[in-house]
Image 1: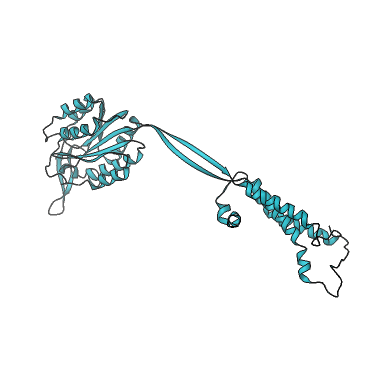
Image 2: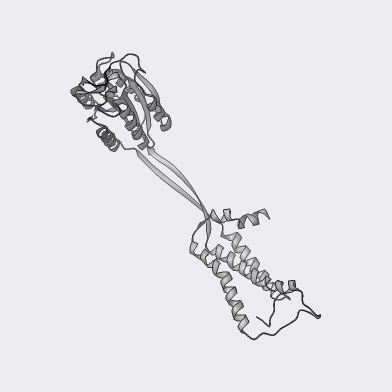
Length: 340
């Protein structure tokens, strides 16, 4: 009984997908047909017939004469519901293919606080790198932060929310030894990638200065990356020359001179079969990440499986059952053959 009433609930009907939804509009025409039938019957000459002897006829007996019409109307309505083909579809998505293992190595040294990118170089790099992470699907990503030393902050993972949290936590002073240890950063990235079995292994290194710290020579590190089949993309961020760097004690803008060792950054990328990019503003940096995204595409394909189940049968059986009931009621006192 509960299943029967569940079929008639609005929530159940609203949860269906309809193969022929326009047929449901005809349900509204069912009472109109019976109303029109009643008007035509009134225009015909009729013969008054009493249900039985006696001075008066009970009102409920007159009401019962409408029962066959109600049963027929319900039968037609449920028939239309069945013809509209109520369905429910379950969809399952599977990903197949091979992704990329990629390490982001970001410079967090003091010079990244320079404000030629707004609000500063580090914050701009964090924001754009987080957007880049969002565009990856099926790839494993890791995060390395470096200044005078280099540290791995996140292992290779597909938990992009965790990776974005680590990116948001990057700040100045998190590595006590200041400087730019590009060779050390590449060494940590290589350790993350060297045992990877991914189709493609990539390191993206972003820095704004020249290597002046660390015990590993950057060019040697790039050659090691090439030996392990790791491709290196280097990004030089910021402008050369005098750029804004906060305010002086009297509130006036302060400027410092900065210089990117572009020659070395190009050599590093070339040694590991990669490319060098220069970004002097936030828009340029965003475009650099877009270009890298186009160069490093995953072979990930999505397979969709749809399982569609029909639910018209219960409504069809209801329609047939009510139709048979209507045929039976026509043979009883509820039907007036003289009127029909």
